[in-house]
Amino acid sequence: MKEMLALFGNDVFSTPKPERLIHTLLHIATNPNDLVLDSFAGSGTTGAVAHKMRRRWIMIELGEHCHTHIIPRLKKVIDGEDKGGITEAAAWKGGGGFRYFALAPSLITMDKYSQAVINKEYNAVMLTQAMCKLMGFTYAPSDSVYWQQGHSTETDFIYVTTQTLDQAQLAALSEEVGDNRSLLICCSAFRGKAEAFPNLTLRKIPRAVLTKCEWGHDDYSLNVQNLPLAEEEQVDIPTPRKLKAKAKAKAKSSEPSLFGGDDE
Ligand SMILES: C[S@@+](CC[C@H](N)C(=O)[O-])C[C@H]1O[C@@H](n2cnc3c(N)ncnc32)[C@H](O)[C@@H]1O
Image (tube, rainbow, N blue to C red; front, side, top):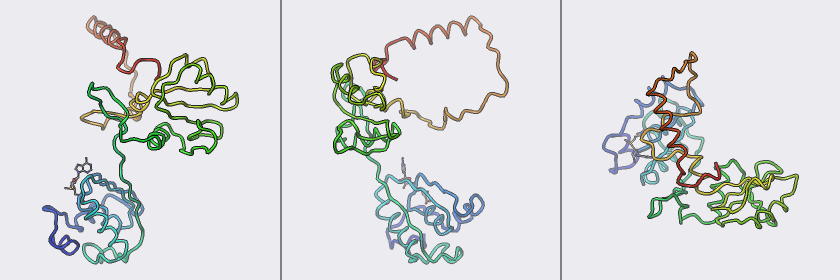
């Protein structure tokens, strides 16, 4: 509380943690230059202590005190103006810096029919930047070629549009792209056979976004990419109950999905 009063006057959090406590924890658990994550940053004590202890840090905060507390506090730490907390114990004199990012609004929202749609707050540039990021492309719009909005290699490009593309438009794009280049097209919808154009890959927005992200879980801790390997191969003996459940699951998976099945 005293540390908070020294930094912010009367405007303090009700349950601030002393810098010394975080110092002890980071001393036990981390080494200089390690990365410390505080995804509920509050008044920024963890980041301030990590900084003074020469650890790198990431803090996340949704409250306005990000601007009223965390940023001014870390600036003081960097400028060597925060003399309190563990400054003396860590022989901290100032230095370093940080970058600050504000999250964009959600790219996908639900319309009144509970259908996933592109958020109206997104303009064309924001949408293209977001799709480049999600699909692994560098956003780099060409001045002269409208469909070259980003690239993943020198010959692989991305084109994002909210239009519905028909067969004739796809054929024209395919011809322009030619044999030695490839193009990922992210559009609202397309009419025509995607496989007719080997140099084009077609993805629908928002479907392409939804398949890249996880939504609506109570618990995001299960990372399916890093599942532990089974120790022994298990032999699955089909019992009548299992066979019934399998048939039920198969019937369910063949039901048409919300966004149609003509892309991933
Ligand atoms: C008790 S404080 C955490 C204190 C902090 N870890 C420290 O080092 O002093 C919890 C903070 O989490 C923030 N918070 C709650 N939900 C959040 C969310 N979904 N994303 C980011 N911050 C969140 C609250 O605004 C609040 O400031």
